[in-house]
Image (cartoon, rainbow, N blue to C red; front, side):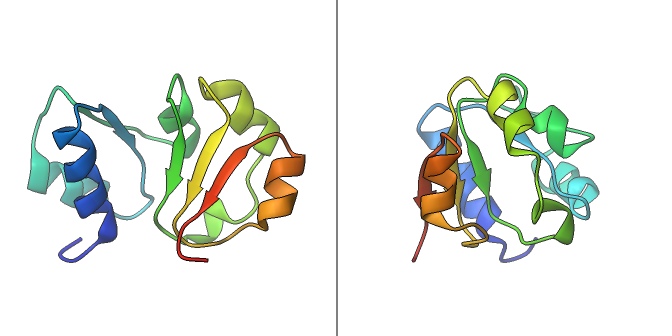
Length: 107
């Protein structure tokens, strides 16, 4: 987490007034240690829990568990089907076909 892009992203979102719901299969304890308890941060126990009621999904890690998601579940949990893919894990045309507003960062 020392130089993780997720830190820069979360801090920018907080500066813009956003709340963050986060999940990472490996970094939850370290995130808690770094940021402590904050009203604008919810650390979730599962990737599915992080989706519930969120305005968008932002992927900034490439863990294997994120590579074959249930896109219908994702769409049903998000307020709007918006996905920012910071690791370019998915094909843009395929995501649009699935009904997402899709942003492939850096592609």
